[in-house]
Image (cartoon, rainbow, N blue to C red; front, side):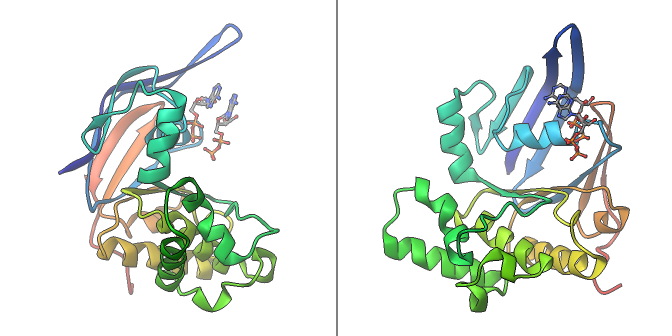
Length: 233
Ligand code: ADP
Ligand code: ADP
């Protein structure tokens, strides 16, 4: 039941006279329903990997199959099409739009989809319910705490009902209490069936997932099942 399959994947950045091999011979399968973390030191290729998984960037060589379809060589507009349907992003800096209300922010990724106004409204409501932010739907992001803003950002990622949630350091801008709250939320979503791939520097949060992939110099140097989840510890 593979959702994502990477085969001999390579990413090379060409700048001036420099070639940077950001990813080298990456072979990886992520199955539906998995909660995976990606760890490793700065510069090891985490962002490059997430950009490729999120169809923001293309691999230099190798194959990438998403939900049974080869997407490694898609043109930009085809990539955007799949990205809109299959990928939900959660960022370190929340990336909410300050001039829009919470519900307008959550509705944003649905604008590119052919959905009726009613259907959009239903999806926004469902997503806000799931993250416990329905009571703040008419607030602006600036009227919310960091933890609440990230919950709204999670709702935005969920609204399109994507095949996978990609999270890049989702707790990086949060204090420890709010970080744990966001990790618990991701755990809840995982238990309800979500597939999640999360980049993190924080070793404490690796145990919330089931599987850890470690990168070093663009290579996968560990791929292991984590010890029992840290919840409640
Ligand atoms: P993080 O992965 O920790 O969020 P970044 O992705 O911003 O950090 O950067 C990771 C590394 O990649 C850094 O060493 C940074 O200097 C380098 N980097 C990011 N973008 C570029 C770029 N456009 N050109 C050259 N190096 C870059
Ligand atoms: P991480 O997210 O783990 O910090 P990155 O994927 O950002 O790692 O970077 C991997 C390597 O690729 C680093 O050596 C970085 O400097 C380089 N790199 C990242 N983005 C670019 C870019 N746009 N242009 C040139 N080099 C880049």
